[in-house]
Length: 185
Image (cartoon, rainbow, N blue to C red; front, side):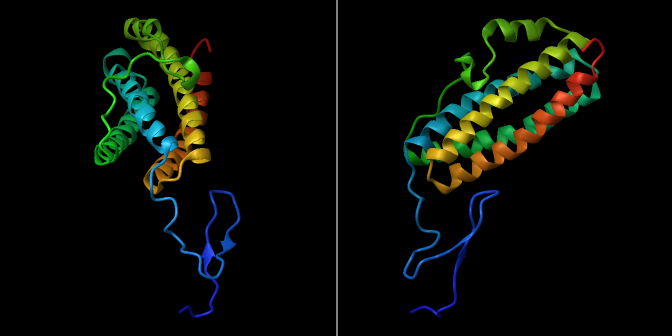
């Protein structure tokens, strides 16, 4: 028995809210994982691992405080996300992808050659390559998050995809400005 008062259901970010229909079970739909949810977690874990590998190189290769700041932010955000997705997959009985590989560039993954070049670079050359690779890497994460939001339905993975999309969009804009500010850019 309802009160007759309307129930407002929020829309996706930037989308209008709507009024629930009588008898609709608000907040119950979309809790069961689908293929898009699993693909997102299984793809994002290795993707994040590569970003962490890239950020681990920063301390010994540059003194640029802006680049160091980006590395710290990325590590602080992505390791907890890996932990959430790892636990989520384990709860489903799915194995967690090992390593990070150097997969297709469609999702911004750096190739083995690019990672070796990053390892060999120092100072401004490192900063420039790190920012270029990380911008592309984040753009790939945006694509993955967009695909999850378009086809996923599980609440935790949708929330994760929204967080990835929002946070990495901001970081991309900031990294582009930092790249433009480098000497010789």
